[in-house]
Image 1 (cartoon, rainbow, N blue to C red):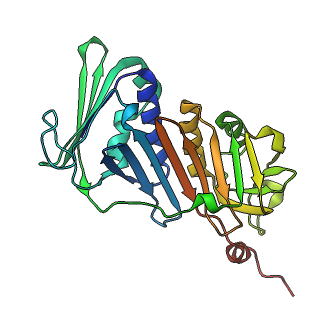
Image 2 (cartoon, rainbow, N blue to C red):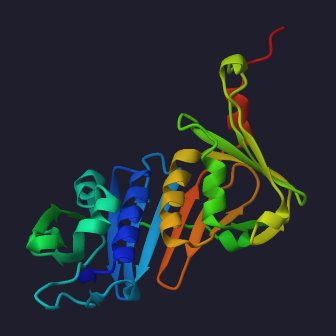
Length: 285
């Protein structure tokens, strides 16, 4: 594999994708195929999965071969490879600096010594090269038929980000409840919480504020906010609307983006009724 990111937008979007999946796990799958490059991640409890797919057209140059044959002095990976996220983050540490100082980013693989090379061609002729070791692994893919979900919302990423900014960074989980008349995002707290010392947030939206609004069943789902924040930071760089597919509590919720050049999907577990009851204290006699 060899691919090149040259335009400012491409580098910024790719860098934000790395930061977004870093919120899922401390490792990720780097999966090049003929049609493009996929970045995947899953957390240790298998309750959060992320995939960002970049079409080959996203890159200024993308070279991939079906077998291990030379491709501009590089070779393709025989299997997806796994990288430690902490080794990749320094390459894209500050996206704003990347936009200003880096003119081109080249990514290539060397299966013979199991390395992925990130090369940054910076201003004034400075070249930064990162040779990162990878581990070959089995493919990673989440099985979730989002088209079967009765509830589908589509909203501009800026609006969703404006909603989430009202929740404190310490907020771990939020609840999304929907009816045909409204959508509500609110803080999730366990029943034994001292509410006198807790800030609770609730924001309601009307159906007219969504690009697409389909509620087939009234439902209330609770999920982790950390992973969603990562997706929103990524989506704002792309200006692509966010689609939300979900069912009742206990079933996954999917946040996704889809464009001509890229696709992203974050699938998160939701609390089921039994888990909510377990988090509540036993009633006193």
